[in-house]
Length: 112
Image 1: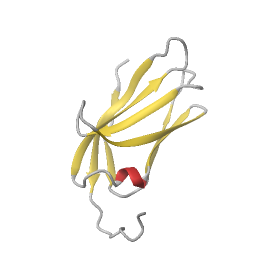
Image 2: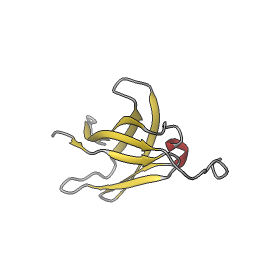
Image 3: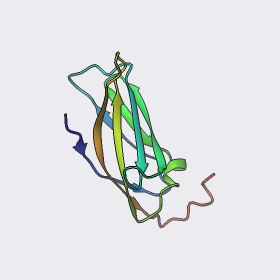
Image 4: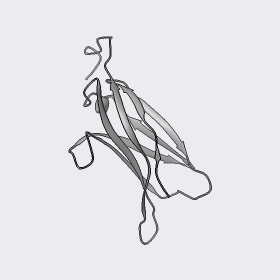
C-alpha cells in the first residue's frame, strides 16, 4: 500500500493535533510513530505523540515540540504503523511537508 501525502501547516509555539480514523482493519495493540526532520536521514527536530483509542489515532505536536521548529521553514514528516503481531510489520501510512508559520503574538511570557 502506498502512503498518502498530506502536508501540515503548524504555527510555531502552538499545540497542534489531528485524528486519523482507521477502518477495515484491527489496530488495537499496534504502535504508531511520527517524527519531523529537515529531510530524510537528517537529525530529529521534533516528535509527534501518537495515542490509540479504538479505531482512532490522535497525533499531537505539543507546544514544547513545536517551539523546536524554525518559523517560515518547511520540514518533512511521516507516520508509521507498527503492527503488534509476529513478525511485527511496519507500514508508512502518511507523509508530507510541515510548513511552519511564525507567530505574531509574543507568547514568550506564557512558554515554560
